[in-house]
Length: 170
Image 1 (cartoon, helix red, strand yellow):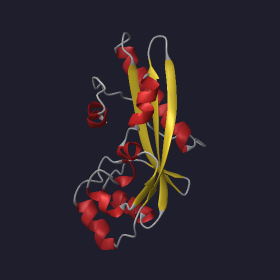
Image 2 (cartoon, rainbow, N blue to C red):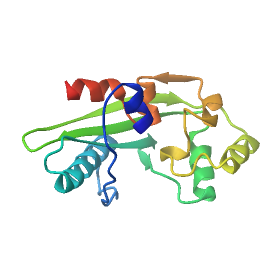
Image 3 (tube, rainbow, N blue to C red):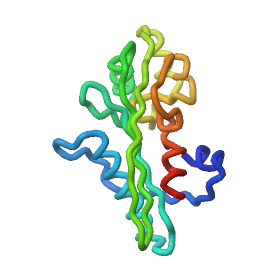
Image 4 (spheres, one colour):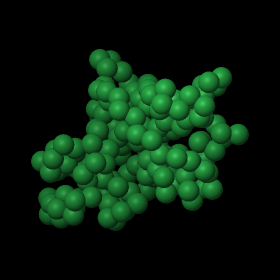
């Protein structure tokens, strides 16, 4: 996200927010990422009350399931097996919070995954790239070879819809 903001010429300072990222019962993906973005922004605002804080959260969804970050290689393999040869959605919630302003929005991008063999998945998981990635992949990395098409914002799939963020900042 920092690289995307810097490339767009947006000045910022990174501060991590420690919040519970559990999905609430019955919460849909759009509401989930928007809530987390707001909670992250509010947590940082408590540390820097004079700041204008941008919070963001991204998740991958398929078949009504929210795929977070895999906890290990086994879970990464299971996620990739679910995604291979199918279309899924990436949702990112963004929130801008200050002492007198609160704005939030959600971006959705459809992503097509090519069919992957078990060997493709094993190779990709062994690369280490799926670790700490929603849905167990990074479109801007090695996984690009398995994604023939998207419908929507590329930067959203990377983790921050820059055009949406820019529109909220203006």
